[in-house]
Length: 342
Image: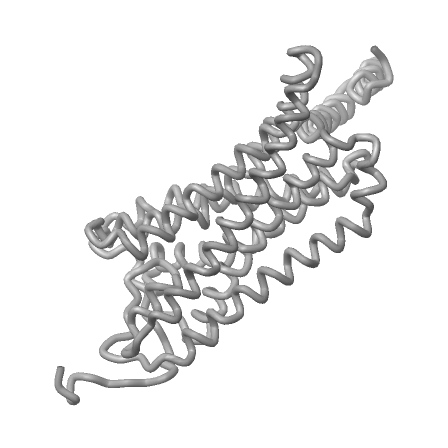
């Protein structure tokens, strides 16, 4: 390419996000499920945080980690989805270089943090099932805080080189990113330089996020399964395994799309571009949406507190709109809901 057609600039002022190339006509229709999923992410995760904060009986390590997961999901989805919806609704495709770097950092940072939280939750399940009598002495509040800080520090440190690597490359020809957000490999592919360092570092982070974390989770659940199968009755085994089912579901919902997206972005050369982009959005949107639903439906304590909250509210509204005799009925109903009567 001649020098007249090649312009290099180390830090472009802006990038242009194309959204989903080839499907611009259907962007409004595509935005509907994206918007619906984002609403579910916001409502679901804030509900988890509200219930755990309100109920003192849920102030335990398992629910502390669940709150960390909810906050991580909120940040992870909010770092990309508002801009994606702005592209679909208002054709707002321009994003400043610094904002692009910030978005890229947050998506990778909190993706690694989420993976670390899953490891912490696996350790919590291991201690609760294999060492139940020592759980309160092992997983103290101090230990939970230490684990949380370690997970956040690891995610922050692993994502930090992405900013430096993206910033150092000279960019040329175009500043158009064929994606809905600033995904690392799609940004560095615009550089006029050997980007193997960025590619190798991305694979290293993927190995730490999926390889090492999944290894520790598998080790934890190997010990958990050994403890479960050593129980004397089938009912006890099923009940104990049921306490792990929610965690296993959210692990699969997170790691499968993450691994698939990372591999297809590097090796899926024959796949259509819009397929790459859809997969690239799945691991950022679907797990944060599914996590509160899975835990809300499969965790009895959260489900009961949620039902209790709405039932209690409904009873009070009913009692306020009824005559004086109904106050007695409302009080009895509240007592039954709160477990004061058998």
